[in-house]
Amino acid sequence: MSEGGDPKLAGIDLSTSYVLGVIYDDESLTLEMDFRLLETHPRYQPPGDGSDGCYGKGFIRFADLDDLRLRKARPEEGRDVNYSDIYSATIDGDYANISSGWGEIELTARSIRIALD
Image (tube, rainbow, N blue to C red):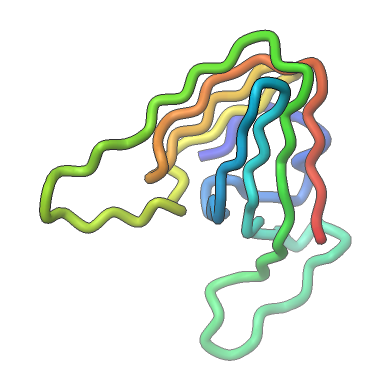
């Protein structure tokens, strides 16, 4: 579920998007994404046969971090986990909390940039 009315997310459904990669250092955190685009998004294309929606690759980059907490998931032994699944996501102002198969990310950042390739 995607919460918060951040205009940067207009036309994007984070709850059915996917995390493809997580890159972080002392100054920023970038989530490589496969965004699920809604019909209201300017890049939306009707999905082809057998497709479950319109997706576009891109990223979310959090920079000038004030606070960052990462809790990587530790799946039970022998249990398959899809690391790309998003369980919940909130981006509101300078705050973000994203829970996914990869783990939980909670942060505050002065700069949040969302872009499609």
